[in-house]
Image (cartoon, rainbow, N blue to C red; front, side):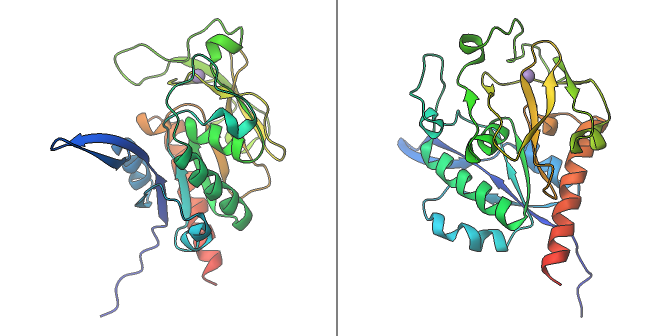
Length: 252
Ligand code: MN
């Protein structure tokens, strides 16, 4: 019997390594928030969880087996990645994860694999391609608004303006749109080849970046996986569609 065609693209989600304590021993654990998994599944993707790893020479082989990469949120990228020492105000770092995700981003961009980054994921995309970030918004910018929201749900917190003519505009409209905000760092210098496609209305900080030449290479500073509004769903649907198209193209 021939199985029905299943065109769900495989989406690999990067993970966070936590030094969880179990049965009295410290056992590092790979974790992914369920919100990412559910958002990708709801948009029609087949989710694979991707543990952090050291054998970076295997990354191209790994990418041959998946159709899209979702870079999830997490700890701060290490400032050494963009030539700085850690300032007061920096949070946890995980250089092993940094190295793995940088290898993923570069190989995926080279091979045309769809990449969608959220929060740290967006910052990591920028750093991987040679851009940099503010290590701490409060200490390094004159922003007068708070980007680490304090409300009881994950709903919208501040507004972002959308760049005219961007891929993001095609997906969510010309805006501004209201987004949630859970970050203390932000993109500063955008890497060559990328453009800023959303800017915080109140303080001008970059809230989304994209590669205008790529099939899908987009990062957002907010967390669309936590909200089910039209704009958030549009982002996930476009990502899955790009991954599906890439899969179809590579199997021909
Ligand atoms: Mn924000």
